[in-house]
Image 1: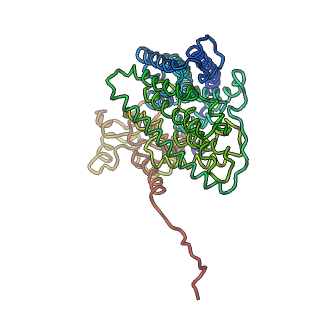
Image 2: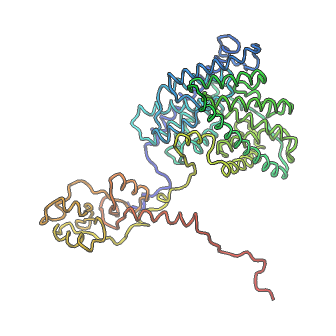
Image 3: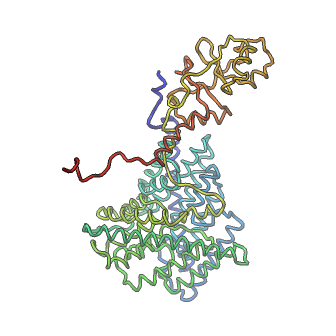
Length: 585
């Protein structure tokens, strides 16, 4: 087989099948975990606000506690602080940054303690009135389930990452019924690659969770609605909405971390911070009861334009303030549901003044735009909005506003709300995706096709004088025996042998030499050089004959980046715009 035949569009590793099978099992377990989390949230909501032991759904806004409601989130905050202090500090926060950090800096290994304590703390936080969503905790918990399952198998770090992400997004699918958006969340936020080895198992986990979801909850969209087609002038409205939602994302992210900085200045142990955040939640919930809890019913009312402008303003202010204070205090809860509510509220207020579409269309548009701008994931936000509503007519305006909000935050903000927390721990994340230039080019494009070789029958003393003397050109040379490569020889190996009268072939063992095939990618060979600590490696026609066709060095591999440099920086003009086809007479 020619070495050119090994080239493929994708890496077709056969391990993809067993990893996908494990991901399917993880999808089942994450769906069950999501069901348990929802039941736990309902249980604590009924316990805190209605003093009953039941897992039936009741909104905390229907409580009859009066002013005593202020104490409920404080009690929940104390419990969360104790769990974090004496259980695991990793339960603090909204989950997605912690999952990213585990993927990039902890070899995708998460502890069983997190898998148990994170959903418990989140259920207490949300059940005691915390203005959070369940998606962040389930992403963290599902990721922990995937990681723990992976740790029982002999898998690589990359495969363990895939299984962690599979558990995370399968949980999101089970909560929201949005398998495609969950897969896009994995691609845009968690995987840091777009390869079959990760995409297929994650897609399998999302599909499993999507098919199982009707067994644990209603299979219909969370917020069903249908918009009317928009007029062309709506393009301008989408641009305005996108900019305003991007500005809202910047404002919320900046305010959140200033609140967090304020908590760090308090002369109290961080264990007590969630109780202080709970006090703010209690006061806000007393003034605006519908600001308590996840608030899916409020989001539905905003999308349907069922609330008056004055009510929307008061509700949004209360939700934003208590969410910022509670999340900044280090309690446990997600950001998606609050962002959906705040974005939809902005759309409800802007709707009457934006031309080109019905006022009822803009809450959905702004909801998705705020999410896309805040999380820097516009494609996920667009599909997420569609899967939540099944509103196909809104796809184009949602995409437009989300892209504009995304562009606004990319220009204005150095980092997103998700990566800022990680950066504050001294770990910067670069989220742009691109094809590695080392993967775009094969070895035969950069190798030295006229290598200088050493004959295996030559005497060591002669080779030392001819190849490693004052006129030495390379650090190492390939050694060939009847045209086949048997290894590489450098000065150190030659001197260490201490046998000047020996034949060069006698200095090599029986193990097959480390070689490269000319059809392999530069990245594959670069990894091989790094793993074995080599400077140069012979290139052969095929693994069977080991016929020498070239030599590649570390410096040769850099050549592939020159094309990328030219594409990124060199500017060319091939044609000049002219109104005349020829010279005027």
